[in-house]
Image (cartoon, rainbow, N blue to C red):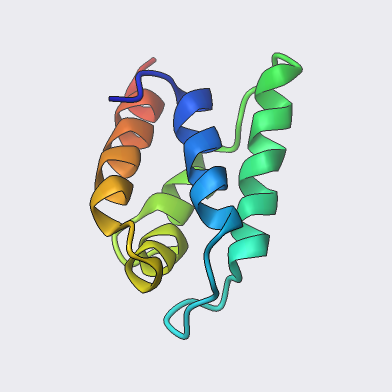
Length: 91
């Protein structure tokens, strides 16, 4: 299991890079990936990520879940989403 936020975001970006867009979300796979890459850049600079944005992206029926369902990685998304949620909940 992925144990850190950076790992979860990188894995999601990898999955998104070969994903097609979904009719169920207005976000394209490229837009979601770009947003996650921005969060990764902030982490690399030692800055805080926008936790609210990540919660929206990984929310049930949010962009990441809809894209995962359309592209066959929904089970892995559940693990990634849980990891992101758990890590963002830490003080």
